[in-house]
Picture 1 (cartoon, one colour):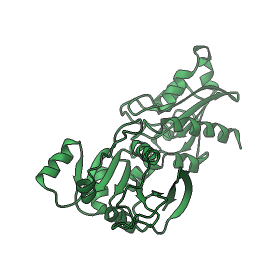
Picture 2: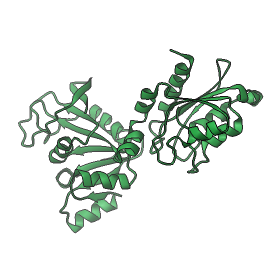
Picture 3: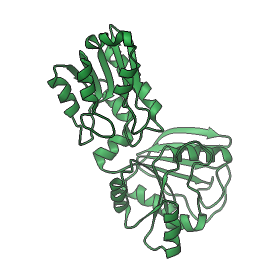
Picture 4: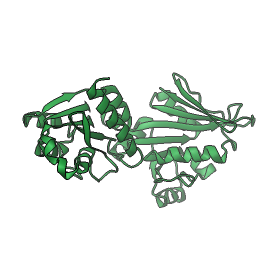
Length: 317
């Protein structure tokens, strides 16, 4: 591993600390190095607050400020070049007089897309781009998918019995907690009309810590009472087909979507090839139910975990 790779690897490690609170912004880490010694580091903690570069610069001791002009700043994602909720980081790096900047990967966001790198180079800074590029892109799959494919990163989730049915009590308190953790990691959750009316699901994170996802309910025929109930919970109705759903979600700025059911809704995402990962919990006993679990195909098993008699498998497309 080269020195550049070593410090970008540290940027990635730092960036992961922003997993819960940075979205819809990307997770970013930054490290400041002088003579092969880290003198500052930081990450983007939460949306609306200082970016990784700002926090890294703020962490530098006052007595080391004069070293910045001879230092290299490593950033997992291209420094922003536009005014948003915070000033552009590219301008900050220029004002600090850094000698060199190493960037993991470029920012696909339309207001950046190379402009941050150009600003640094125009100021005379040496810029290296593409160090551990694939790892840096993978770090922000949700951000890259949203801006690159104009849709959310889509996670499918369901619990099925040992004989492949979903209309029964399958999850345990422990696996329910795992489910609520996954909800906390997504901006929005989607269920079908039947799931909403028959199961009356909470769709919240009561067994975990975090923000409740925004509720979306798919369907084309709702009563006035159902519409009022969904809206009273801050939810929204999605009509049409899967592509219509995703267009609305993109327009709403939703970067991460958890689809929890029912079977027809989940199958429509699978058949359309519009999903990124799927978590399937399988119980230990048959239930001889009436509703068969979705048929997941063209999928690759990524991992399998055991939870006190339950199995949760993660698949990727």
